[in-house]
Length: 441
Image (tube, rainbow, N blue to C red; front, side, top):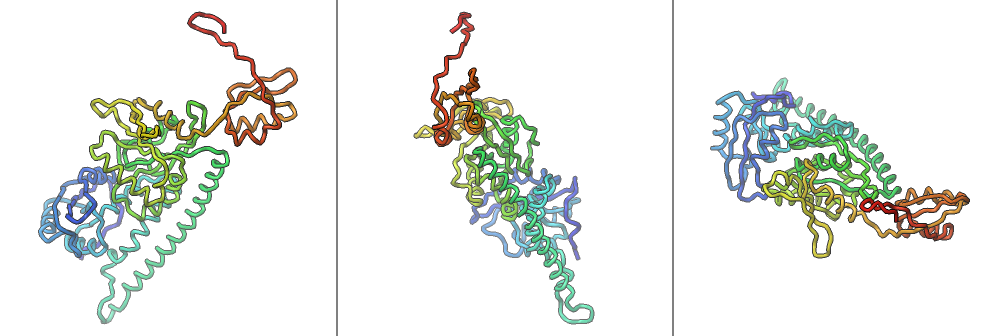
């Protein structure tokens, strides 16, 4: 009888890929994308089998003819695993493994494996382990078919049931332990978020389909060195950086994990603490691969995940990246009928159009600020520090009495509490030089 080998694929494993299109299914399997997923997991596709059916077979997912085709492919050469571009039920996986005498994994398990390989931070590893255990808890029977309860007889009474109960209890205990640890991490994140809100730093999150170029754009904007590669799920662990826009307005930019169609629900649930950065953001930069012919479908799929995590109400700007891959790709900025920026076309690799995105960010985080020229008496010097923290100081000098003469751009609600402690003061024009005619003005 076939028994599953140790889970966890090794580099160089060979796989048969199976992708079936069903008439009554909304999910449209993308064979090319699944091939990239498999490659990202470190597996070499040896044979790709496709087909079409009215609906999945309840016991085997595929029909008898397709099972024979898969069986012939297994017998044809060395194959370590059969990978389905679909979600299989535990019973379907068990039946296929038993009849084909080969390990069978579905799409969700392939994605979970990639996440397990890529997670680097303590939080990321916990989240992936939680998703794996939650997925495994529904499929324990697959690994213990030789210990199932059988009819009576000496030596055949009940060990399988006991073993399964033990495994379920151990997995349940581990899941509870991970939840407690992630709760601590969530509280730490919430504390950091409250600190940023107290400092009134607006949060901007990069979201989008996997491999759309989010990390490359993040590095271009922040001059960071976040790992970026032309592969699916290059980024798992979120990264936050402070970014000062050209008008000196500070924001917090967050790089997040990429989405994909049929993203396992266990993963979405496990990464909810990480995705809170997206839910709490002031604006989402929805990065799209402009060279992807399926980009409109990708946008819909990302929006579905955003709806699932409760971030569908957060304002979005569509950032069409990779215009360098288009024949006539040009940087551009598009507005709606009300004048609000909705789309930005750019290239994170070349930097073309980055200035347009910065302009869009300035408009998005802009609040009503007024410019004041004031004199702060020496006795109220502490106010100077508050204005530096709350506004943008455009000019500052001191008179002989030690008073601070300041030109500041600040929100009225921040300026109002200090109105009675400062004096409006007309600063003398600064001396500038006209370099064209070399004249002083």
